[in-house]
Image (cartoon, rainbow, N blue to C red; front, side, top):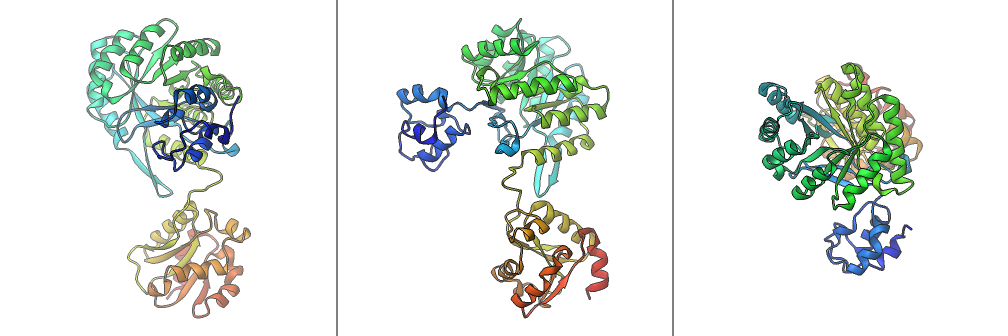
Length: 448
């Protein structure tokens, strides 16, 4: 039976040493109760406490780490079925697969493109999360050489894929220090794969022909001492994948069924007949419930929408992405540049900032702290009003940045003009366009 944070706290050393990553033992206990931390993070917990707390404090889904560097991949660790129950914690990892049957040049070009790919979204820089290496040729030496070559060209986490234990062992001899995941364990090779995972301290990917078989293999690996497991339900179509992954998530989260309490790996390309279908399958896996999504095609036109979808799903619904309050220069802003105001919802900020930049007219953009709400939402919630704008202007010393003392309100909150004139009596209050895209035309008509 699950214990409360207070019940768990009674078993902890109460030293507040912070070695677990939390400021106090009580905070750590609360995270344990929520399934967002692991008891092993406490260096001073007694054997007696471990025995009492191990089952109660285990997260319903194990957090698994792949890779050894700064870009290590963390998947799993989820505690809810739906993001609005609380939030999702670890975004689906987007991985691109190369095969040892491809030419050296083709592999090198793909690895380089995947490694260098970056894109900015609402002020956050994103890239790909890893590279999978498939043993298609059937030769252990070639697979090992391919793995070593890929490792030498990227710092991204790696996933080795082969159901040949000998080939997997040969590849691990070359790149075990990179802590790759090894995927390919099944009912025929499970014992050999377990030994490889244990000997090299890496995550083990297990594939079952059905969920019953997958649970049996998972339980066997965990019982043999493999701590990090990744589950492949072997489904590849839209309907069967959705059913299997949802059932696995429900068993892990709702039923606390430990053999299913591990992250999943999915392969949208294997169930697709075209790039468009692979993109649709990948989007489904990001939404429901693929911890690792292995793409067979690297195309920025497909990857960017997936990153956007993932960002939307894995943003805490109770805490929108926010900008820090402040006054931001757009271009080479001077004392004569337009002075605009907006809220600190990141998407709102980057939308208006982009439109301001596209006008070619340097400007100032003052961001008010509205707890991450957009303009109309913040206004209706009483978090974006004349008092807030005036207070922010004073705190950020707006008068020292502009000489004209003109402030431009978003058109959708024109109703604030009169109140703001009272709050900022020595400023001229102007009302900007209703839509950010119209700011260029508005400047031409209204700004001299």
